[in-house]
Image 1 (cartoon, rainbow, N blue to C red):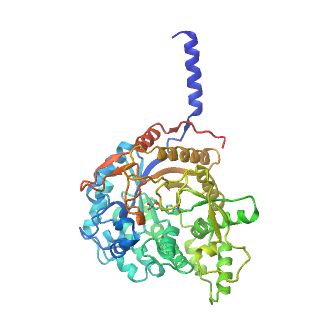
Image 2: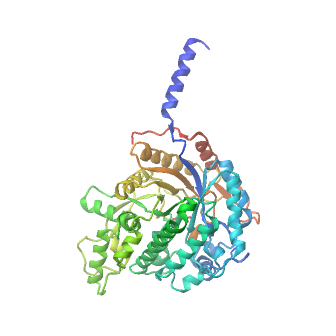
Length: 497
Ligand code: PNW
């Protein structure tokens, strides 16, 4: 090489290393799934029925093509393949969930299904062999049917059954598991399951049941957190958190009303659960708004269940870290005038008072059940909101992903989504100093996508649902993500926007 060539290559190295944004060595990379969406084996090996089994079998019209998760990706039998895929990916951790009714067929601890326990021990051992850290969600929407029959999350006593179940799981699996997550996205379960009715159990009382469910889930989380503290922490030395989500909202215009609408949208999702845990009690504007509307609507008391002082203290501070899910952003304006209390329909949407719209320049997923736009900036904004409002707790991204047709292997739009979103969290972590320690992509593989069935997939790996083998084939995005994990760096991530 002549001198000019040498100088030139130094220049190239200089330029390209400048464009590389590297994460610290301790940053954790992973992928996520949930039990009901992947396991199958719905009524074998001692598993009890859960509310999604019941929902899909009794109301097939509520799920695209009448699909169910009886077999799903068959991970009950094929977990070793899943673990191998994670290993090849280079994942540091795997976020998956336990099926409550596989461990406790009736939901209660008087009947423990040893086969179910063994299954999870096998998964944990397989992960350990590959040095993959398990991050275990105790509950990802699959309530045992017997507890649904007691009123499900409308019944505050279900919080105690959850605590029993959580306590059992700590004792059974705590030697392997150092990161626990109590509940996945309570707002989604309480809204889609008890408010809009699109998810199991299909109730449509968003003005009342959504809040009852929120109340019970917060108690359930807090009790399970306290049990870990009291009985397991000293010996097992793990961490317990919860998974929260919000659609991120930007004001549709710079008007004060639109700014308030955007703030309220976030408070009615992240605030509803985060405020009781990180600050104490429901957010004040939520208490005031639902209280005022309830009176105007002829209720004797607020539709939002009030916490007692004891309950406020019980829930406050119940976190070691926070799991955050981010998918997309919308634009907010008020639905009605904020001071309008007359003739307001009873419902979560009217309480929250947000009219959603979107920016036509945003790329939209062609298939997703939620209006899913590729807006990386919202990710950084959400992380900053959490840091600013909840005292900058340790955060791990437990889900973030993009939906495509399931047989699309050359998923360039998912790669585009990942590229933008990782750049966005890089900036949140290293420019804004958000206390972020890891990222899980949703999902490891295409799976039972709730009311969409198998008509869309969030996976890095495609699954052939027409084959009894449920053959797994990595998509282009799997290899793209593998490269990022290996280098621990991003290319082409500009800090300027
Ligand atoms: C999550 N949103 O739900 C769930 O935790 C997963 O089980 C699910 O498969 C995944 O997202 C993909 O749909 C979401 O409002 C709930 O943007 C709400 C939203 C996104 C995802």
